[in-house]
Image (cartoon, rainbow, N blue to C red; front, side, top):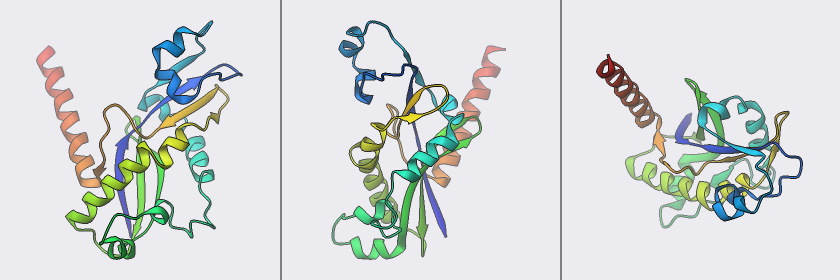
Length: 188
């Protein structure tokens, strides 16, 4: 049985062949001032959706399925006393991106053997958030993905970071859509 967690993503595309900056430097004003010319742009979630297939291939290639025993990020899970029980419920967890509407989102797709309770979900959100910011995600965002347009870097840790369950995510999207409709009606 599949269980998904959703979060926003962000990216950068470097059009130059040299890619002289590391990922963090694209957001460092001093590093950017030192450049002779700027050959990159920031990518929003809509723009990242155009690269979904190649990003997902790169994500897949970032895992060593033999050594992680097919568990993905659950191979490294070590939260506390409840580790064993949660590890029995969550067989694997692999990130990917998925386009919903026009925007790409980070998705942590888990293979579960039984329903997750609220505490399980809370623990997994904290764990995956840590993996996105400091663990797997930090390493992944440093790896450029070559495309026909340039080298892209994708971060699962965005400025407006959140992790939602499918139900929470659906509610968030519905609320955003309602707010957009209210805004349009207000302008008329």
